[in-house]
Image (cartoon, rainbow, N blue to C red; front, side, top):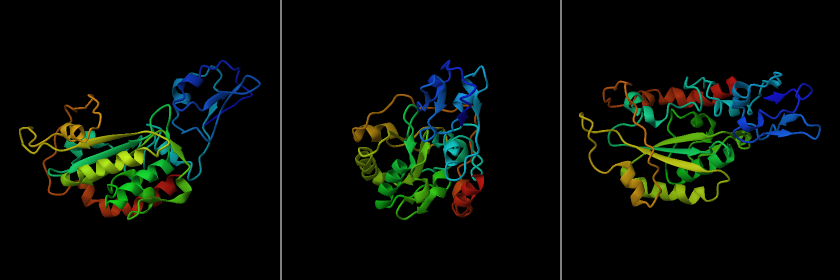
Length: 266
């Protein structure tokens, strides 16, 4: 995204709309976009209402093309067919069945509006998880950016790309929860961004009553602050409980093609 500075009258109405503060005034009074900080989310173009039409979309080559894939809610990931950050997230699990009974779904969101995140910070999370044997879920779009799943290392050319946020998703066993949360907590101290952890489990009772402890209780036992803003999705339908999730059934195809598809999108 760029601003045609020759047409800008310096009204500044666009600057507050940028979620990462990348729109700044120039000495001549016109505004411009600090390209290294811009996450290509498109908010300025869609919402600021520039009276002179100064915003222009510029083609983004690889790896900069990743910025809009993880920041613009209208851009669809080719591999997952999901706009935004490329994942339907854990909140749709009653329909997508990505996490089955007996499994814990783990979500780590790195970055937030007003801050964003470099993929180098995301790599710190994926490598820390890999050291304790936790791999990224095969249907998570981040999987296509991981050069070595065993180490969690991302392709080096993507590390300095900045995005609004990335959602890292994994499946973990309940008896490993303490070690995983402890690893995330220690790793988060070295990040230049912020991260939020989400936990999910499916209702094991067909009438919708969960057995055992809830994710909220797990987090509290680990002395983690719990935000009272859980989400329940209604009127979405409910998928039968399969023995293997659709995502896992397609895992081989997804993990093999994700990296190539991301490059083709650029």
